[in-house]
Structure formats: C-alpha cells, structure tokens
Image (cartoon, rainbow, N blue to C red; front, side, top):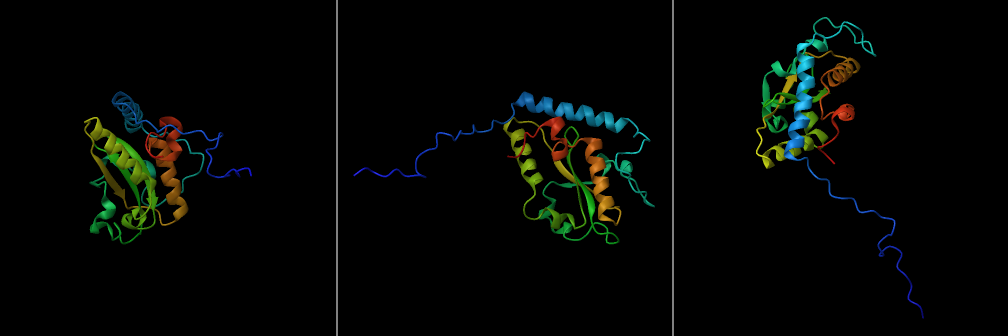
Length: 193
C-alpha cells in the first residue's frame, strides 16, 4: 500500500524565504539623517510661499499651521505616554493637540501627528511610530552615535477634526518627516517592518 503524501507538512517549492532585513550601516544612517537635516533646514529658513495648497486650509481666528515651529516648542520625554502628567489635556479649553517627535541632537523632525484625545490616550497601545522610535534609538546606540529623541506638543488646535487633519497633512508635507508614511517616497522606510 502506498504511503499518502501530507499536504501541509512538505515545504512548498514556491515559498521564497525572505532575507532578514539588514539595518543601515553607520555611514548610511549618517547620510540619511544629513539629507533630512539639509531639507528641513531649508524649510526652516525659507519663508512659506503665499500660494494656496492643494486643499484650502481653513482660516482660524488664532493660528495657522505655518506659524508652528516644532523645534521651538518645549520638549518632553519620548516616552511621554507613560507619564502621569500627560493623562490630562494640555489645554483644557480645547481637547487634543498636534504632536511632534524630534531628534534634538541634530535637530530633525521625525514625525508629525494629531489627536483630539490627550497625548497619553492616543499613544496607549499600538502606534507604529513607537516602534520606529525604538529602532531609531537602538541603531544609534549600536553605532555609538548621539541621539536625543523627544516629543513636543502644540495644543492650540482648531476645534474641527477635519481642519486639524488638514493642518497635520500640511506640516507632514512641509517638513517631510521621515516616520510619516506620506514621506517614505523621499526617505524610504528604514525603521519598522
């Protein structure tokens, strides 16, 4: 009697083993950061164009997104969501904020986000940027490079969620923050799976 073949135990001849992703070399990491720094410094010293964007940013009575300088905001721990002080809103008159992840050692703006929750509530649980931050710091430590990842918050946001999301998108494209997926076309995705 012939032995019956097992359908699921045999290795598939069509399965291609994925090579383990290799981290950036020290030189690649430095070049990657230098490119982002050069772009962001140009943005910082160049006044914003007066032309309208692809989507019209709503006027508010108090601020516009181009007024926000993430590098000038007070900085907090990159692990801010673990701190009790972030359990309450930053501005009790208007829940939510724009938040920024920066590396102060160069400086670089790594991520732009928005939330109508407290920062603590938004970052509890799963958030891809937390993984990017950890991998970014780990790679710097591996190569013994200086790194100072911090967070910063802008609480003076418009009350409408749609306008807040427009502000976020505007700032992402303005600064080309590399941890935002919208900017991977320029910087690649060296952190995250």
